[in-house]
Image (cartoon, helix red, strand yellow):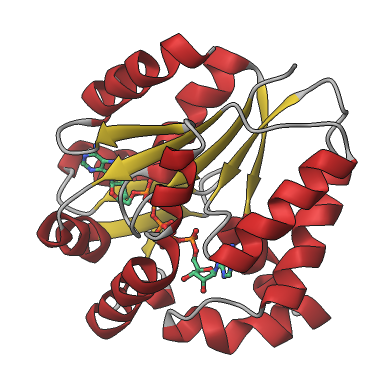
Length: 218
Ligand code: AP5
């Protein structure tokens, strides 16, 4: 059975930062709903237009739209290839849909990785997050990382802040996480799938903890 991971954690916990290492280690295909939504919004598609105001406000996008996005994205992945869901599921409905879709396509979850980070560090990381654009594929950095900022500028890039990384929207995203997403942790704990990881400290340390947490399951 191919590996099937869900990556859960508050906004800014480092989910996207960790995915590169996980994809390499376990040879997974990634589905990142937030990234897909931002691409649709940038392209001005019907989905993007319907999702935009929810993303800007830090609310969850309507379940019907996300259900379709998940099904289409999973259909693009060969059945014998493992997958990583970054930022999905985010509420009980989405977790129910995921169970059905996986069963219908002969797949299964092998672990739910939960990144744990105190709110203060969430606010610090998201407040300092910038995307380097205009210098190859966009990449994410912290604005106080002078070496990364210099690398971006030397390559002709500019630093752009995500619209939903404003303080009021960060607070709303955290509230939504607590109310709608965090309850899923009990569900995955009860199913024996939950692997909790301390997400404080530098990325290499978080990566090592994540691999250690996943090793008995793989
Ligand atoms: P999404 O894009 O998924 O945002 P999120 O879950 O809020 O997570 P982020 O992307 O903000 O953070 P991350 O955990 O990936 O952290 P990162 O690695 O970037 O979703 C955005 C919106 O789309 C939602 O609010 C919602 O509206 C909508 N949406 C998405 N999925 C949906 C769904 N399923 N249903 C309904 N709506 C949905 O790291 C953050 C920063 O910290 C970076 O600057 C990074 O460099 C830095 N950093 C990372 N790790 C470390 C470390 N160990 N030490 C120091 N700095 C670090």
